[in-house]
Length: 277
Image (cartoon, rainbow, N blue to C red; front, side, top):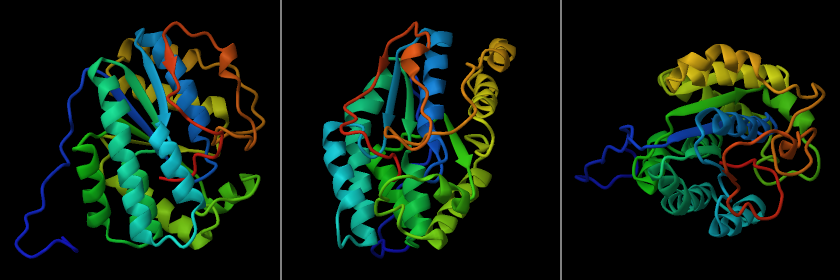
């Protein structure tokens, strides 16, 4: 592995880790609608399974994560390796203090970004070594991988037109950077089709959610409800999208949707874009 001292054996963290809960991650570039879709899916899975649902994000899913998020998205003079290590630190704390405990008690955890974002952004976009970035991330989470990863795929040029407000460091990185990042996401999805679901993010909010529900009902062995998944997508306005906790286009008010199980929003901090890995 590039960067490993001679004679040091690379540990293998790639195996799936079994937990009583369900772990689902959403990935993709900026402004593809990850936050909207992850929230809608969490609501549905809570109603369907009766389990506790934990909605979270990276970076910024814990109080420490909020501080690290500010540093990495808005800090100056940050090189690519420092950036990658900050994300790994956030992820280690996030998993140890929020994600793994929730999974161990049988909750459904839905995260807006996970370690695949680091590999795509730092290894793909920043052109660091894939093995290096992946190993750091896997070490940070002790091998914990999602049961399912949903990739919302969108041309970066189209995504750039959706963004509103002042861009952060990553949003300002340029189209070439975001094209490399997109290709890295697609490459990872192609290499592990059992885990990844790739969805065309140009579709409407309700069509995207319907596709996700049908696919996850099968993958999570909720097959008796596949038809229900197709028929029970909430009627949402088809006039926008959302990829953040802030106003980037349309974000449905989930307070108006029925909930039969608790939904936890862990210390998200100030509302801002979920735009970094």
